[in-house]
Length: 105
Image: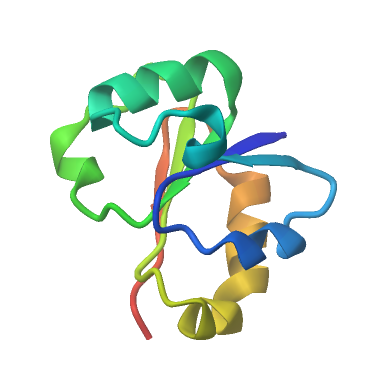
């Protein structure tokens, strides 16, 4: 699976996604893109977008998209690390067009 980390997604999460190809928005030169453009670009090359943008669900229609989106509750790696295995499992099972979200603990 090809996974794109949006800005704010802690890069150490990559270590829990072994077997997947992970790139960041910054590496792709897409840091300045708005959500609609980012989703269109990501959908052309990736299977999953991992983001911390909790407003994405309300602002973007995912129906019919080939891309899945995983929304993290925070950018804080120390907090996310406790959920890293659950995040990795959802990343493995999420389907195209779905938005998966984690509540803040």
